[in-house]
Length: 134
Image (cartoon, rainbow, N blue to C red):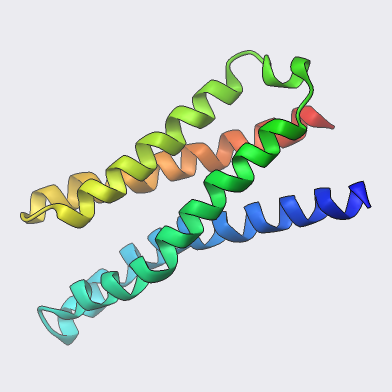
């Protein structure tokens, strides 16, 4: 039963990360084509993405807490890797929130880039943590 819960926890975490990180990268790659389809099309697509992105971020946070609870004390103290990941998750969420509220193209670009880069850093450090748990 414990193994099934571990698999479920990891599956939900990876699924949510796929939506949060992969969705940001996909949407960013589509922006030029969306702009060509109409000035409001990128905003419409972003609003549609938001409906699945924020619930995915919530699942990431909840399963992240669940992942923390599953770590041993030694794994939690792993040379600052966990701290870097948690900071990257926080920066990603705050940056994505700021991106949604940005009113200038520059603000959209800066906050969007910071959200995506920090999400990738969180993903990388999640893989490092998973590798060190083995």
